[in-house]
Image (tube, rainbow, N blue to C red):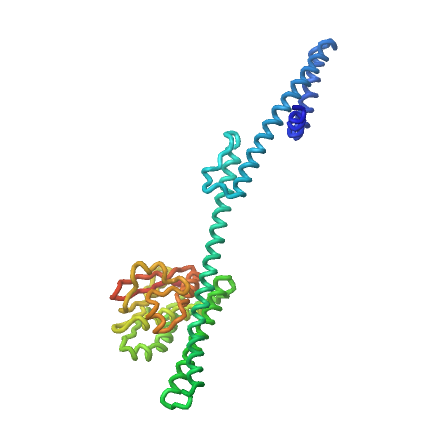
Length: 342
């Protein structure tokens, strides 16, 4: 019992200064109002005993509250709670309860975010390993075939060398894209914003793809907007975006046309790449910007590509405070569009 009282008084010691000041104030009042010392002393003694009892009660309540808070924190540390609604404190600790709940939710969200990052990291490493393995094994296979005697066969040696060379190009493209997306996602990608002529910019890119489009009998068109129209952005990075969109459009269009459209608005210019290709299933539209995601894996590998192009394009456009919007109908074609500041 004495140990409990001692513990209670110790817990209430944080209020000793206020308690002593209160006692001194009351004693002074007693001496001023009661002149007889024989009456004053018993009252002061009664006051001291009452104060001692009050301190004991305050200390006991404080210990109870602290134990209650300790138990809640220990349960959180042991992951005993699945929801913040399970955290309940006494009514007079409701303010603290709300703070603990907010802390719990934040910690829970942070842990879930870290776990999601870890899963993405593991998946990314698995995808990178797979994507690297494919061209390396192909190169190894072609070289082994040549060393085993095919190098002396003029009918196939050049073919195998060309295949090996193409796989080295694919490997180089993959490594370059990996470097790009790593720099983008780590915040190390430096942007160089400036105004430039959008019409000549698109026309120059389009001219590079005309021979490739003609090989597949695809009509490639661009109708310039008003002369001298300027947009604001990183010219090199935006070129990377348009090159990727045009490459994809040509890869997945077997016949028909690809058109680049410009629509001028008050403060922005909307740029669209529209094709009459195979289209994208609705279920895949929300995932095509994920790293290494392919709608048709077999066809994607046949036509080439790293699986990172759209992910990089998405980040670049977002760095311009814009967003790539996709509209697609399976079997009819797709439209990729984004806006740039004038």
